Image 1 (cartoon, rainbow, N blue to C red):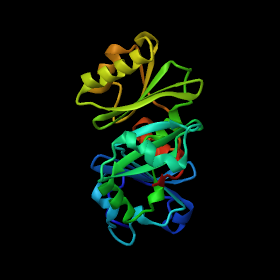
Image 2: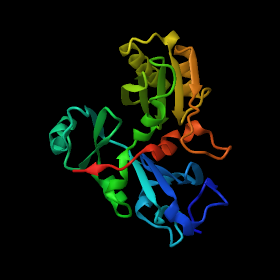
Image 3: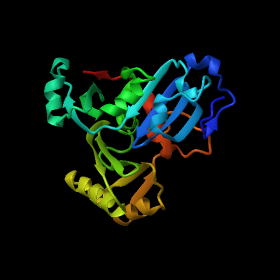
Image 4: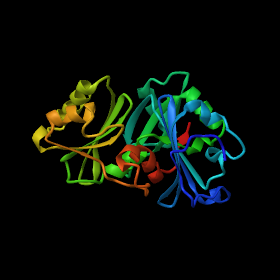
Length: 271
């Protein structure tokens, strides 16, 4: 066995059967987490690993670099835009990307987000280079894609705001009639800024605070600083219970949703 620190390693996991499993990798900031799944069951889970390890094997038994049936890697974007499918032309990706102010050090990707939207996003080129030392560039997906798919069809129409907190970034989503109505991400420094951005989105969507349910996932709980602050502005705050894959009981599903929801994604295409 390799020398990585695993939070969970199921007794059913068989490295010789890696070709039957799926590898999910979620990168955020300077760290990453990964899971190996067999259908809807998690077999391996590792969190908080240094990004540099994505390009370095820890040995011939390293579970991160087995030949899996499918690999899906969510990378943090440095900018994105949604384009209606009705207007999208694959040959025009470079034209759409001009709205992102792409720098020479960044690379651009394009992939379907849902039936109505194509997402065009840019990623730090150095990070892409680290990934492609060991993985195929087509394994890379828009980091929020799975989370969006997992939550956009949940809950009563127009009454839920979904938040995912990852470090100093929050993703906020609202849907109507099972379709994406709003999605954006914001950087924040403290609980007051988090509450501000959440309230700002609610105001833009003309949703009264007393009518909204906030559904939280990621690095947050209802009684930590961020969760407690949100509860002062919104009457209903709860943790997300969506479970794209089955987790061991000791792991709260909301904290790993961004990672496990990658199981709902396909591949990306780079230009």
